[in-house]
Image 1 (tube, rainbow, N blue to C red):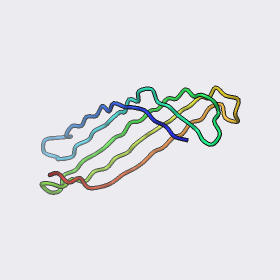
Image 2 (cartoon, rainbow, N blue to C red):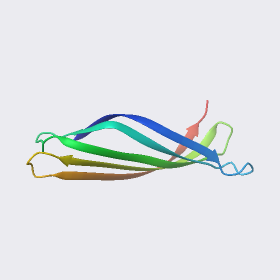
Image 3 (cartoon, rainbow, N blue to C red):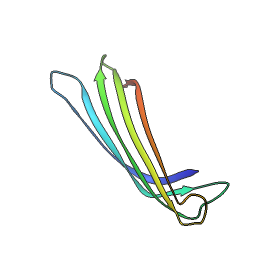
Image 4 (cartoon, one colour):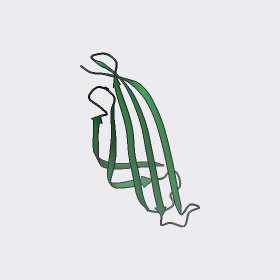
Length: 104
């Protein structure tokens, strides 16, 4: 199973307080005409909907380095028109990421 689509990302962030350097943000992906395909067996043509958004937090600890935490939520829904074993399918994925951003 694979999905493909073009998407537009809307994202923003803002500092919590001037005296506290924590910055929080969010992003939302708008997928344009998502398509889901199956192999080796196809359940017919599909009507797909994809929802993708994330929350993040950034905390600077040096001039060029920041801690970064991301929480991502993705959901793919597909309704199939064929007479195969599946008439609809939903995939939900939640990821938690922690890392370091280096700023040039």
